[in-house]
Structures are given as structure tokens and as C-alpha cells.
Length: 211
Image: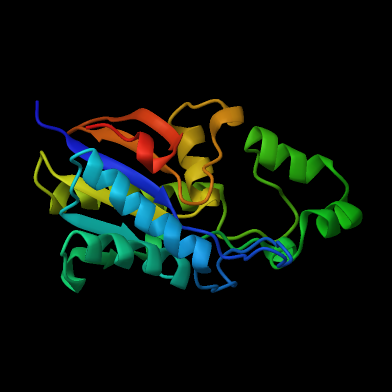
């Protein structure tokens, strides 16, 4: 059976050395810093080395995801039409945690909620996160059906989004919470068949990609 080779890429860094690192979600439209640009180029290089040339890319609407997708598309000679900006990949709005550091959040609300999310992928309640876990996953499922509809059965497709969304996708696909995080500039590889989606690799250095 022919299978869509689905590669997920987390956008590159949005903080330079010395910057205050804070939670960035739907309301924090930061561009890639120099390291992030290099990470996007490394995703393209890893895909090329593995013989995984994408024919179409889907990305969230914020600068960091659009820039990552654009760099990869350019490396493969793809025009703007090959980059699809999808609202279903818009990052999570982190409510009261948005634009605050881990230490600031812990000082206000304690350790339980943030540890539950970061270590166990448990959605924090009562802090204004939007649009909700079920809605995020519904958006992901819409995107998967769109990818099935819009791409040939043997296509290579790249999806660029954020750690928050990918963490919930990992949870839904049955990965252990301890393995759910994707670092900036890392990739995952999945097999998308007519009726299934299977994880092959997760949180992988792009240089380690194989066909």
C-alpha cells in the first residue's frame, strides 16, 4: 500500500543567547532568531539527505512557523503555492502563562500544573488556555483529512507547528508523556495510510532522518 510520508517539524528558536525565555503561544508572534534560521535550514538539509523531498508544506500562521516552512520550501525550489497556511496549526493560547517564564509561573501557581503539562502532557485547567485540548486535536484531525485529500498516496508532506500542538498529537498517538516533547528544530516522521497514522520517529535531529 502506498503511504504518505508525513514529516513534522517544530519551528526553530525564537530566543537568542541572553534573551529571557518565556512561554510563546498564539499571542506571541515572534520571528526566528539566527539560530532558528539555521535550524530551519538544517531541517531542509536533513530531508534532502534522506531523499524526502516534500511536495507540499502545511504551517501555522505565526511568523516562526511560516518562516521555517518558507526556508524549507525554498531549499527544494517550491513556490508559495506549495506552502499552505492552516489555522488548524495555530499555536495554543497559553492564557495567564503567555509571555511569562517558567520561574514566574511557578512563583504564582506552584509546581503541580506546570509539571503536569511538561512531564505528563496533562492540560492545565483554570489558567485561560485556549481553545482547549479537544479543539486542538479536532483541528489536527481536520488537517490530517485535508492532507489525505490534497496529496498523492506516495507524497512527502511537511507539517510545521509548535511543541504544544505536537505534544498533544503525541499523546493522542499513544507515545509516553516522557517522550512527547519536540525540541526546536527537531522532526518526527509518520506514516499516513488511508485509515491510520503511525509514528516512525519522534523528536529527531534532522540529520538522523532516513528514507
